[in-house]
Image (cartoon, rainbow over all chains, first blue to last red; front, side):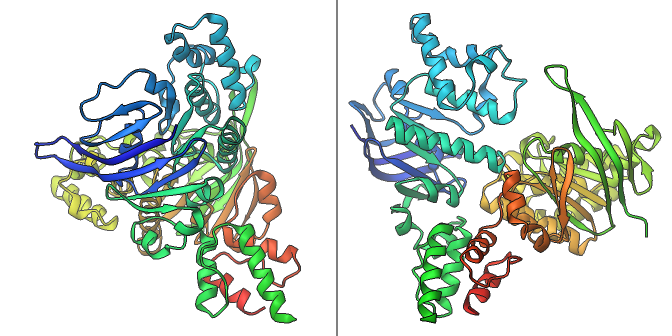
Length: 286
Length: 278
């Protein structure tokens, strides 16, 4: 079942002097197994939006349907929604609290009253999914392992709930290039091998461009752009006006176009650029 | 002239969880001249933050010597003078602001120096102006964006009149707009206020305008030079697990295909020029 969001509006602190419109009539659908990138400047409403998808916030107006669960301003959010939709917050490692890695990841499944052998199965599987060695790490304190490992423990804690839909809010923030590539690689596997529906919230156009099927760009509480990466990246001026970075390579291609070279302006990876430039340059010499 | 920062064969060891001795810095020798803009890159665990913490005596070498403006950081009596000479900005903007009003936060340092109120006011106003935050003097820090908070943190350091500012991944937690704001501020302080800058980052594009780029790996300096020199070592950087700017990557791949593109290209316009010349 897809995720359906219809005319979603959210107002923070309505009726107070601090009233602010965070989401303004947002509608979209996400199909099962899709990998969607959600981009937007700080304050664009993207975090408010994802908090609606697992029921942390309720709409002021409009509705959301996830699987067979409908959420409106009136609804009581059923607990099972949070099992369907796993949300990994920014800097999730700040939420680790248990004495060992095992205990921390097992916390969620134990709260489902699962038998201990099922809890262990889930902990093992979740650790494998994020590339943590079960025997080597399970008894360590989450506070004495490296930052990149801590983040994986936190993600494993969400995966151990076996959600069908996984939302990650800036999962690579603060990581170095190697840590970033590892985490993104694992997320890609969750999508490719498990068929999970994934929503990746990020500032990084480069990361998003490499991974997702579709991009939703938020600006001032509304959807500003939505489509395949090559469609979205062709709106360079709009993206720029929203304070969003554009891949450097897209700038190069636009520079070439401005100088009269016949190249598409929606190129966003180095691989695509190499191919196009080789074609043009070699074509010219013939 | 004597370098403002000197490190001679600096070692720093600590005990790991398993009780092993780990060398976070393993023989670092480095001179930084007054007014230089130096960027240090390297992945987590390469020793770059440990190195930064040696520059204002938050850490002291296990062996070897660090001199800041001629002062040996092992000299306890010089501790405060060293910290006033070399100010430090950290990664998380929320952990560095202490007051409920921006100008009070910036005044915190000078107040602790026991300066007269008019001198404190003057320094706070100047510092906020230098980082472009004068309009926010009366604002509450928690209403500011990440980039603005970092600029307030930098102003707090500036109010101490440092000659050196060390920034330890100040942009890691910011969005693209915040990163741009902080980098413009840092470059301004270096160019117009003559402050020596040591900037630590993962983001290679922040290294492009530096006077010198230093690459750390396993507690050692493995590469250093101008941005052009360092980034043309694409293979070495990839081996270490670091990024190169996308244009450099493009130049590298085009060369591999036999095209005559210079490898020391760092900026979009240079790359466009190079391709148009083919």
